[in-house]
Image 1: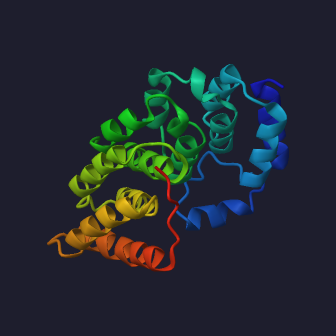
Image 2: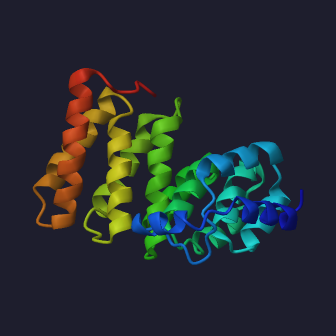
Image 3: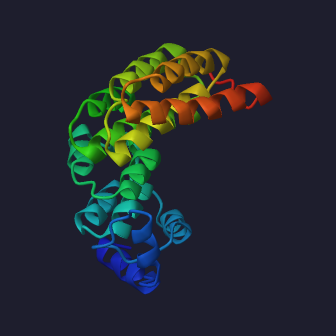
Length: 227
């Protein structure tokens, strides 16, 4: 299947009735067809890995095709130039999160990009940096704790950003790092406690929300014991 044929398939699967619900969840629907994630995953499985096809699908500008592109691309063939082009084109939190979780967090430069993007001004670029942190914390079994301690410093630095998708990304990263193992749980709880006492309302929300979950996880032994 080429990109044109796949887009035709996506149009067959389109569900205009889903767009209203997507919009209620803050998803940009101007270029969306309403294809469900299970349908996109099934289509990606049928297609297999294809870097050139992924680039072509991304180039269509169609919301659903861009998520599909992140599912069929191969992390080993992704370039930093491609990552930069895609991340600056993000216009919706779901495209941001899917591209990061399916693709960017699995590249060789993921940790470096997390730090780099966390300092950027653009809302979805900054969110992407913190989603990489969250994804690595929840999936990279052998990564060393020191990498996540450095992420905690970035979380503290950006904890006062009031923008909705940034603060939720920061909170997500903090919770996932603290769920990784007992040592990082203690470090994340210390940070969450400091944020809870911050003069910034955003930092206080991040800290209090994360602290409740992290303390509850530790008390019932629901840490991953990675690292």
